[in-house]
Image (cartoon, rainbow, N blue to C red; front, side, top):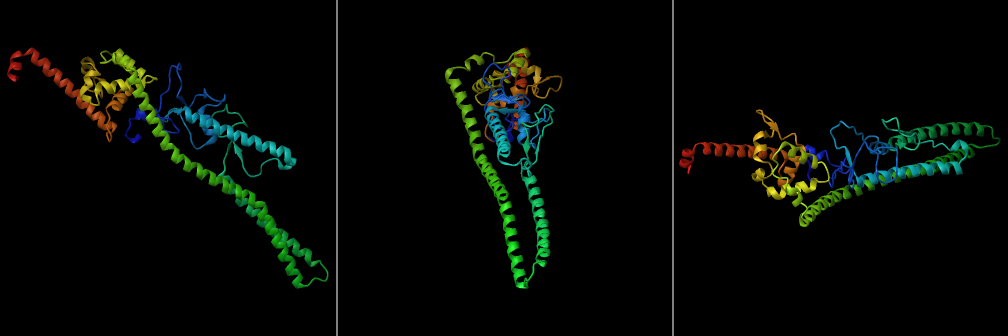
Length: 369
């Protein structure tokens, strides 16, 4: 699905993390919840005092969500489960590290010397130890450089010390001295390599695992979007076969402002798929049948932009997006839809005025015939 061709209202209703549009938020909270707002606590899975936003921040501090940033504010249930799983995995690793250090190391060795753990969250309610984020790549590089410098300094000091010590050895030839320094330097270098190798291997392994995960995600993400799309289409077909749409067909055409407000409200609940399917059946893919969705009384009172003393249909974003979804063809953008919608409204009004004028002037009507 090419979301660049979708309306802003449609895009803002996608999942913030996987960009899925498989289902909507259940505002009434009386049916299965397929999505949740980012600033709510997850209602499924393990109970946690953190909101989805705070969980996301604890894992990726560079991803920041704000209620007023005009970006999607919801996360689908599948991503919520994955987010909680990653969070629990990080906590498990941290707890295991602490336990191993407590059981196997001396007291002065129990504090990890290389990786800093910091709490990254704008909310003051986040727990201190339980929700820490580990910044890995940049900090480990700093550790590597400082460690390398320390090794060099220690090596120089030990070489100087060995030179002064060998000067005090009696009956030692220059050849013996060269052999002594050579063997001492090699053992010291191998010792440094032995100390550094585990950390280097861990860094290399960690980087390789991240690359593999990114590669797998690049393959999985398109498949997830395709599956979500197919599921939505199957639900529509199933509902159509079961006659569910017949219940919503009775509300069309919309004849009053109250009905207009009711449809706009219902389109923000789990009824959205039913309503869009009904509109699609009525319009048959063409805006020429718009009069079957909006009664003439609504069309004569409104226009798309709310200009020339008319009320605005543009303010009913959910309804406009539903009509767009019900009539769109491949390659048609939302701007193209708006242009066609304006022309259709104008055409219906012109037809209405001409019919009204003919009814007042029968002579003109007979001449036209």
